[in-house]
Image: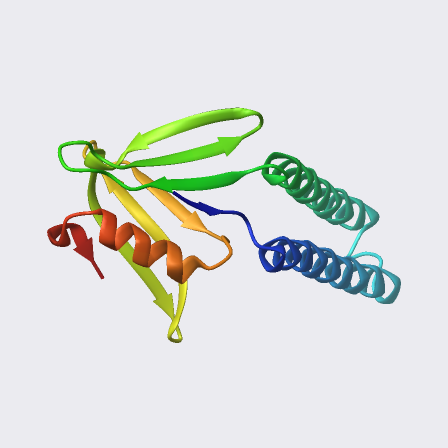
Length: 158
Protein backbone atom coordinates (compact mmCIF):
# COMPACT_ATOMS: atom_id res chain seq x y z
CA UNK A 1 0.00 0.00 0.00
CA UNK A 2 1.33 3.40 -0.96
CA UNK A 3 0.15 6.66 0.59
CA UNK A 4 0.23 10.10 -1.05
CA UNK A 5 -0.53 13.51 0.50
CA UNK A 6 -0.96 17.00 -0.93
CA UNK A 7 2.40 18.75 -1.12
CA UNK A 8 3.26 21.93 0.74
CA UNK A 9 4.37 23.34 -2.62
CA UNK A 10 0.78 22.99 -3.89
CA UNK A 11 -0.59 24.80 -0.84
CA UNK A 12 1.99 27.55 -1.29
CA UNK A 13 1.16 27.85 -5.01
CA UNK A 14 -2.52 28.33 -4.21
CA UNK A 15 -1.74 31.06 -1.65
CA UNK A 16 0.43 32.79 -4.27
CA UNK A 17 -2.41 32.63 -6.81
CA UNK A 18 -4.76 34.34 -4.34
CA UNK A 19 -2.08 36.98 -3.71
CA UNK A 20 -1.69 37.63 -7.45
CA UNK A 21 -5.46 37.98 -7.78
CA UNK A 22 -5.50 40.51 -4.95
CA UNK A 23 -2.60 42.44 -6.47
CA UNK A 24 -4.20 42.47 -9.93
CA UNK A 25 -7.52 43.64 -8.45
CA UNK A 26 -5.78 46.42 -6.52
CA UNK A 27 -4.10 47.55 -9.75
CA UNK A 28 -7.44 47.70 -11.57
CA UNK A 29 -9.11 49.62 -8.74
CA UNK A 30 -6.10 51.96 -8.57
CA UNK A 31 -6.37 52.64 -12.30
CA UNK A 32 -10.08 53.41 -12.01
CA UNK A 33 -9.37 55.72 -9.03
CA UNK A 34 -6.70 57.61 -10.99
CA UNK A 35 -8.95 57.92 -14.03
CA UNK A 36 -11.82 59.04 -11.79
CA UNK A 37 -9.63 61.81 -10.35
CA UNK A 38 -8.48 62.82 -13.84
CA UNK A 39 -11.92 62.80 -15.49
CA UNK A 40 -14.80 62.42 -12.98
CA UNK A 41 -17.50 62.66 -15.66
CA UNK A 42 -16.25 59.73 -17.76
CA UNK A 43 -15.22 57.63 -14.77
CA UNK A 44 -18.04 58.28 -12.33
CA UNK A 45 -18.15 57.23 -8.72
CA UNK A 46 -20.68 54.53 -9.63
CA UNK A 47 -18.07 52.86 -11.86
CA UNK A 48 -15.46 53.19 -9.13
CA UNK A 49 -17.64 51.60 -6.45
CA UNK A 50 -19.02 48.89 -8.73
CA UNK A 51 -15.51 47.84 -9.85
CA UNK A 52 -14.20 47.93 -6.28
CA UNK A 53 -17.16 45.96 -4.90
CA UNK A 54 -17.09 43.33 -7.68
CA UNK A 55 -13.36 42.74 -7.34
CA UNK A 56 -13.58 42.78 -3.54
CA UNK A 57 -16.35 40.17 -3.63
CA UNK A 58 -14.39 38.03 -6.10
CA UNK A 59 -11.27 38.16 -3.91
CA UNK A 60 -13.25 37.33 -0.78
CA UNK A 61 -14.82 34.36 -2.56
CA UNK A 62 -11.38 33.25 -3.75
CA UNK A 63 -10.04 33.46 -0.20
CA UNK A 64 -13.08 31.61 1.15
CA UNK A 65 -12.59 28.75 -1.34
CA UNK A 66 -8.87 28.60 -0.57
CA UNK A 67 -9.47 28.37 3.18
CA UNK A 68 -12.13 25.71 2.61
CA UNK A 69 -9.72 23.75 0.40
CA UNK A 70 -6.94 24.00 3.00
CA UNK A 71 -9.30 22.83 5.73
CA UNK A 72 -10.45 19.82 3.68
CA UNK A 73 -6.96 18.70 2.68
CA UNK A 74 -5.46 19.07 6.14
CA UNK A 75 -5.87 15.34 6.75
CA UNK A 76 -6.42 14.27 3.12
CA UNK A 77 -4.49 11.35 1.73
CA UNK A 78 -4.71 8.95 -1.16
CA UNK A 79 -3.83 5.29 -0.81
CA UNK A 80 -3.15 2.92 -3.67
CA UNK A 81 -3.83 -0.67 -2.71
CA UNK A 82 -2.46 -2.99 -5.39
CA UNK A 83 -4.63 -5.85 -6.57
CA UNK A 84 -3.97 -9.55 -6.33
CA UNK A 85 -4.87 -12.19 -8.86
CA UNK A 86 -8.66 -12.07 -9.35
CA UNK A 87 -8.94 -9.24 -6.80
CA UNK A 88 -8.89 -5.73 -8.27
CA UNK A 89 -6.79 -3.01 -6.72
CA UNK A 90 -8.31 0.01 -5.03
CA UNK A 91 -7.69 3.70 -4.79
CA UNK A 92 -8.76 5.05 -1.40
CA UNK A 93 -9.30 8.74 -0.63
CA UNK A 94 -9.47 10.12 2.91
CA UNK A 95 -11.04 13.57 3.18
CA UNK A 96 -12.95 15.26 6.00
CA UNK A 97 -12.89 12.16 8.17
CA UNK A 98 -14.35 9.83 5.54
CA UNK A 99 -12.84 7.11 3.36
CA UNK A 100 -14.07 6.63 -0.18
CA UNK A 101 -12.89 3.85 -2.43
CA UNK A 102 -12.56 3.42 -6.15
CA UNK A 103 -12.11 -0.05 -7.60
CA UNK A 104 -9.36 0.16 -10.21
CA UNK A 105 -11.43 -2.03 -12.52
CA UNK A 106 -13.76 0.99 -12.93
CA UNK A 107 -10.94 2.93 -14.59
CA UNK A 108 -11.18 2.78 -18.37
CA UNK A 109 -8.19 5.05 -19.13
CA UNK A 110 -5.27 6.75 -17.41
CA UNK A 111 -4.06 10.03 -18.87
CA UNK A 112 -0.83 11.71 -17.83
CA UNK A 113 -0.53 15.46 -18.54
CA UNK A 114 2.88 17.07 -18.77
CA UNK A 115 3.83 20.69 -19.33
CA UNK A 116 7.37 21.70 -20.24
CA UNK A 117 8.49 18.16 -19.46
CA UNK A 118 7.10 18.19 -15.92
CA UNK A 119 4.17 16.05 -14.81
CA UNK A 120 1.26 18.39 -13.95
CA UNK A 121 -1.66 16.08 -13.26
CA UNK A 122 -3.11 12.63 -13.79
CA UNK A 123 -6.63 11.99 -15.01
CA UNK A 124 -8.46 8.75 -14.40
CA UNK A 125 -11.31 8.24 -16.86
CA UNK A 126 -13.99 5.96 -15.47
CA UNK A 127 -16.29 3.60 -17.33
CA UNK A 128 -19.15 6.09 -17.03
CA UNK A 129 -16.95 8.72 -18.79
CA UNK A 130 -16.47 10.73 -15.62
CA UNK A 131 -12.97 11.84 -14.74
CA UNK A 132 -10.96 12.09 -11.57
CA UNK A 133 -8.10 14.58 -11.66
CA UNK A 134 -5.14 13.93 -9.37
CA UNK A 135 -2.88 16.93 -8.88
CA UNK A 136 -0.78 18.56 -6.23
CA UNK A 137 0.32 15.35 -4.53
CA UNK A 138 3.86 14.87 -3.28
CA UNK A 139 5.82 12.61 -5.61
CA UNK A 140 3.21 12.76 -8.37
CA UNK A 141 5.51 10.88 -10.74
CA UNK A 142 5.67 7.91 -8.34
CA UNK A 143 1.86 7.99 -8.12
CA UNK A 144 1.65 7.89 -11.93
CA UNK A 145 4.09 4.97 -12.11
CA UNK A 146 2.21 3.07 -9.40
CA UNK A 147 -1.11 3.60 -11.17
CA UNK A 148 0.37 2.55 -14.51
CA UNK A 149 1.69 -0.66 -13.01
CA UNK A 150 -1.59 -1.36 -11.17
CA UNK A 151 -3.70 -0.96 -14.33
CA UNK A 152 -3.59 -3.12 -17.46
CA UNK A 153 -1.20 -1.67 -20.07
CA UNK A 154 -3.96 -0.96 -22.59
CA UNK A 155 -5.51 1.68 -20.35
CA UNK A 156 -2.62 4.15 -20.54
CA UNK A 157 -3.14 7.21 -22.76
CA UNK A 158 -0.81 10.18 -23.21
